[in-house]
Structure formats: structure tokens, C-alpha cells
Length: 274
Length: 300
Image 1 (cartoon, rainbow over the protein chains, first blue to last red):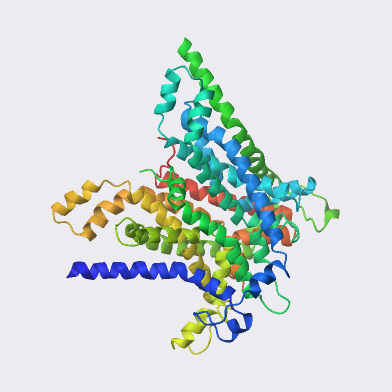
Image 2: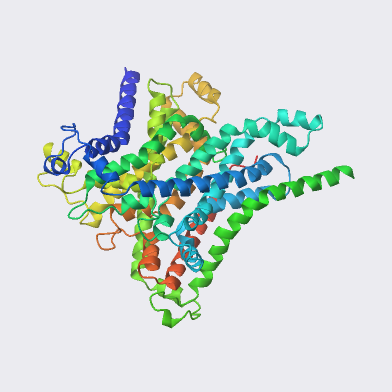
């Protein structure tokens, strides 16, 4: 009897938590297809008349393509660069025994944790003197500060979980490190690289403080900045804001749902060890 | 003899491979940090270039110590951090325990929970701002319909009310991450411990208190570090939800610093604020690592 009561309570709690998690998404999607007039007169949880005006306005009245392009360029370049440089470092940290490894790992972890705001002022002055404010390099460079340590950290944890046997066997057979890295580890590490790349990309795509600080206008604004600074002529254009939110979120949400298992592994590998 | 030289070349290879990544980090993260400190010892008002950039020693830090808006911002940050993390740990622990069980729809729960974590904080803040809007906000509409309140509540006009959406949005966005870290910890616990306890007639509550929680302590502490440091640098969420308002009554230190730097262009003073934030975060991390004996994973 008590057992079944407990199960009901458990089930109810899970359902309530799911409702809490999903409701904002549901409501944003419904509202993005509802006219502003209907939204403010009498908001209704069940969609009445679906309209596509907000989405159309997003790409005609407003130039939402530009922030999307900016975000893709900045996040994409940062991710590719970090993966290239980060793979070498992660390989060394995961596979080669050398003194100083533990301090390096501690250092990298420490850098992932330090507050972004604490380097906004010098980066601003630096970018200003290099005339890089409001340019792509002016965002990509600052993004390395969090993307590089993140990439190295996650990738190292991920490569450590790949069994060493094949590489060791190759070394016994006289293969050089270069050969075992290129021919054996790299192919095995493709899933790790993909997961890490997705994580780094998501962090760059979502970044706000640097993008807000180091851009001046709509020309180079990234998606989060563009959405946050959305203004209407007379009132807050909620319909368009939510349509933009849906557009900005959908790709990330899709990636996360598809690669769910791997992302969780990548995130928690190395972070928690008893 | 040969072995030693081989080890030496291995070490050299190791350092060579790590060097580019370390160089990037040093150049764009560590060097600016030093620069921030240097800047903080100067009077540097970009609005008033004729003042130049005179060295003023610790004058900026003295000003911070006497600045009521700084102390208020620090208080807001601490309040936000403590309240939201407490809620996140409680709910996250429940979620982790739930996801560790086998039940129908578990895969769905695991996937759904990850989405709020992955979306931009700016978007999360906007979704909650929209729900809490005084005009046309769905929450007010539902509360009025249900007869809980007569008049729509204006959430963003008083600090005590404005904190509700802020904390709720943070809990909504970050609990999944907390739950996943704790779940990873749960999965490391040896199941035979529970079987032995069950044989001895221990109930679920006893198992939770005497097996799960003690063995989960490292995971809980690591989560606590990550979340405390996150909480102390909160920026996006509050920038979008309340803008630090009404007035400056929900302004966290990161937002105050941002305003000092990029609104008022006070680079000397803003840099000093940055250094203070860095010092606080660093001290907190040290406190956790030393005081609570947290071992961060990664090495063996």
C-alpha cells in the first residue's frame, strides 16, 4: 500500500517537473504563431488562429539573417580552431606521460571557471587599439578564452576513455607516435571530436557578454545580442522576439536531442570522479 | 641510459603538443588578467581623454570600499547565488535519483531536461520575461482565471517581486546540468551496497541517508563549486530579465562592472571592480578546494 502511494507521488513529481521544463517552450512556440493583438487582449494556451507574420517579419522587416550569419561565422571559426589546436593538446594530456601534466590540467580547469567580466576591460582596450571592435576577429579572439580550455578539457576526458590497446600494440610493432596517432587514435576519436565540437559550438552560439561588449551595431551582432536588443516602435514586439527565439533555439535543441547521450558523457567525463 | 633519453623525448613531445593551446590561453586570458590589474591602478576615463591615464595606486579600490552600489550589488549576487543554488541542488538531486531509476519515459525525461541547459541564456530569460509580463503575461492571466489574484501582479516594479522570475528562470535553466552531474555521481555507486542494506531490512530513506548521500558527496561538492562560480558571474539572465532594476535593486556585480566599463567608460574603476570579482571567485574556489577537500577529477 505504502509502496504504491510512493510510486504515485514519484510519478506525479516527475510529471510536474516535466511540465515546468517544457511549458516555456510550448508557450513561446504558440505565441510566436499568434498575433500580438490576440496575445495582449486575451492570451490563450490553446492556439486559435495560427499566423506566420512574425516569422515573415523577422526576415523582411528585420534583417535576422545577418545575426544568424554572424553567429555561424564566429562560432564556427572558433570551434574549428579550438578543435585543431585542442586535439594535439588533448592527445598529449591523455596519452603521453610527462611531468607537469597535472598542473596543466588544473590550470586549464581554473581558466574555464574564471569570470568573463574580469577580462572585458583589457580586451576592449586591446581590440580598440587594434581596430578590431565590431569585427569577426574581434569576437573570435575573445571567444578562445573560454572555448579553448573547454575544448581541451572535454576532449582530454573523452580520449582517456578510448582503450589504449590498439595503439600499444602498434607501438610494439614499431609504429611511431605520429603513425599511431594519425592511423589509429584519430579515426577512433571522431565521435569524441564531434561531441566536443558540438559543445564548443553551443557555448559560442550562446555567448552574450563578449558579443554585447565588442560589437557596436546590427552589422556584427550575434543572435543572442540581436534578440536581447530587439525593440519595437511603440511596444515590445513579443511575437517577433519569440519567433526569433524559436529560430535561434531550434537548431541547438535539435542537436542536443540527437546527440543527447554523447553530450552528457562529454560534459560529465572528468568532471565527477569519486 | 636509453630509457632516460626516451622519457626525455616523450616529455618534450608532450610539451610541444600542449604548447599551442597553452600559448593561446596565456595570450588571451592570462595576459589580459594582468592588464586588468594594471589598469585598475590608474585613473582612466575614456569619456575624458584630456585627463590622461595617471597612476593612482589603490585609489580605485578605496572608492570601491566606500561605494554603496558595489556593496548592494555584492549582496544581490550572494542572495541570488545562495537561493538559486539551494533550489537547484534539491530539485537536481530529486531529478538525478529519478533518472537513475528505470521507468517508462526515462529516455524522454533525460532528453527533455537537457534542452533548457543548451539554449542561450538570453532566450531563457526572454521566455520567462514573457511569461511574467504584467500586460498579456500568461502567468497573470492564469492566476486571475484561477481566482488566486484579482489584479494582475506587476512583477518587475519591486525588487522583492522581480527576484521571483529571475530565480525561477535560473532554476529552470540550470537544474538539468546539476541533475546530470549528480546522476554521473550516482552511477558510480556500487549497487551491491543497496542490496546488502535491503537484505538487512533497511528502507529507502535509510539507504538515501546512509549510502547515497555520503557516497554522492564528491559529486555534490563539485556541482556546488561550478554553480557557485557561475552564480557569482551572473550577467545575461539579469541583464535581459530586469536590467538590474527596478533602479539598481537586482543589479549583480558583473552587471555593475559592465555598466561602469561600457556605459560610463570608467576603465580604471571598472577594472578595479573586475579584479575584485576575480578575487572573490578565486577565493571561493580555493575555499571549496581546501576547506571541503574536493578533488577535481581528470587526473587518475
